[in-house]
Length: 442
Ligand code: UDX
Image (tube, rainbow, N blue to C red):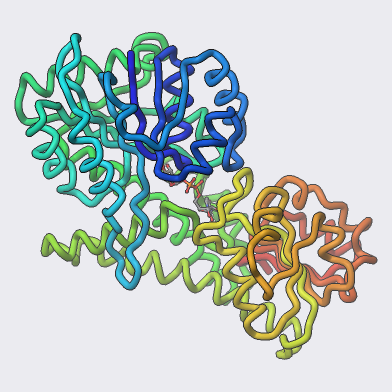
């Protein structure tokens, strides 16, 4: 099937390559010329495991190309919209300009194909109510809208796109349009539905939009719940890692997403819960999401907690101290630094006068190219730790988790470690001569 994918960020680029991998003929559209040029040569503009191989293979096979020209979507039966919806400056609400722009640019190119009407498929995370407004616009050009939210996690984006745990189709109220939209999307995802038998739920537009933000709100709540327990553990001398393991044995609770630490970050959870609160307020049901305010505050407090702990461990005098920060990305296996707890903490300590040396296997080289006079970037953890008065592990990359405490104890000026992700073995680090501090652990 001929497919266009509008927006070639973490979501759109991976979606485009994955659709080509399923055998479709795909064009990816983005306004960023440099990004389009890279993608067209089969080179990934960001780090995502398995993505570059997928890209290279499908570009070489002639099934996948990229363009900045919207006219190149002509002839496609399906148009996916995968542009960003970041948080608006000065507000909690989502900035919808990219979605609005994509739809406006697409409209003149929507035309019936020999197989039938074109189908526009929304994948971006949007405030509830967006889909029915977009539907009106695309229907005016004879197209059908399906809302098909994306649940991919960075670091697992390829796997989550080709083999998601579920699919949701938000369909039109018009039965014929709904049938056609569903049938066309079933054909696109034939391998997922018929071979992999992945559950597929058919809903209305509003439910499909809400599924995405509800899922992210639940995940954020789970993380903030365990981080709130970490605060209790810090006040009582209890151990949140053991607590999480013990409650996680109850499968109604489950063990996943109960890792206490510096809190959640990234391009999704923080802005999605805020946009959800903003939308609820517009709808007059802000009380229903009052708890998300708490979820957000608990999350912010984790970063404050690390700054306070670091300040205490530096005897209250941060200015002029040498601090090593292991990690800059918001989580491992990505180079994404959007709303990264690690980078935020590093910048805030730098603002208090600390001399920060940060290292990150993938985000480090990007950071080094930015104009950041407050941060020095080191190539390795060992280099960053050398001469440090304090070491902070803030993104749990394997190379940091695997550090041998005995081998690196001689590098810093003072071997003091804040393990912001609770991934190091306290016993092992302490017996190697380190002063170890976890999050919510004695
Ligand atoms: C998230 C959702 O998981 C995904 O389904 C959605 O499509 C997009 O948003 P992502 O932003 O890639 O994906 O990251 P995720 O793996 O969910 O982690 C989010 C943040 O929570 C990270 O900063 C991570 O370090 C943190 N986290 C996660 C914790 O602090 N503790 C945990 O137990 C789990």
